[in-house]
View (cartoon, rainbow, N blue to C red):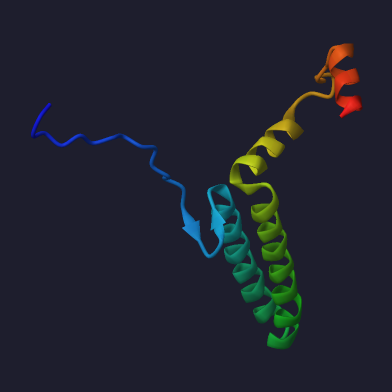
Length: 107
């Protein structure tokens, strides 16, 4: 292989990154922003602009803050695993052997 360049294949990160969010959390943030915009327009038309601002902006900030904490603690993969674990039936459990339990207690 003299004279030929060797190219290595590496894993390409195809997740979407937007303002600190990645993966599925980008879509969650986008849905939260679009929903809050719709609620703002509805409240703006039905009530006053001040009430619409006082209701929508704090709720949106709380939702984005929670998504940011999920991004920092679990990441998109951990979030998806947690959502999948919630969908499991209640009778599914993880069992360990007694020796594993004893070894975990000693450490």
